[in-house]
Length: 179
Picture 1: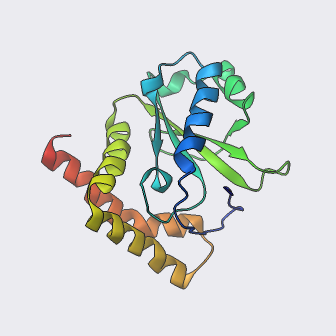
Picture 2: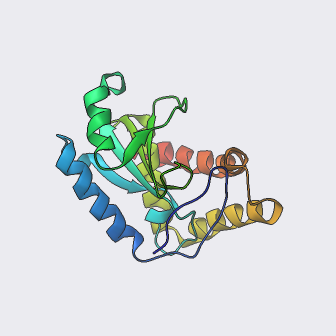
Picture 3: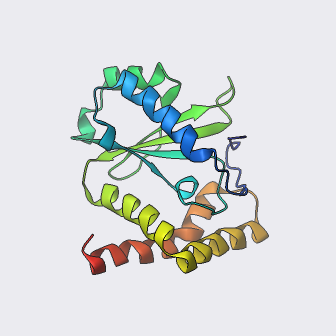
């Protein structure tokens, strides 16, 4: 299994059945350094959607009680297993990354720390579960991602914006089904 993307690179690879095992391995590492319950750590993103092509990066959702209470000890604990807090500004989220190189250029894993059972937590888990249960939607999402690659292999922010309408449409379904 080969994980990692260079800064601003967009690459989609075939589904790798080792991705869930890699998530479980990292989850155990997180549990070993943070005082959190197992049910606060979830595999999300396309690598958590069985059979779908994805960026070769493992996305991990970490539920915390209060985002503002993420402190130096919390950051130090994650750093001890190779995760560094990124200086990105995201609403209701703190992001950590693990790198494959000493120059901090090739990201292999992300931890998305969000409010446990908050709106973003629920949306991200619903998105994963909904696509895993709906083959047509899974294929549609894969097609959206592949369409971006036909125009560019760079621009991770543009890639994220490209997918946003699809993602938001699925998030709205969560409200419809009362998830």
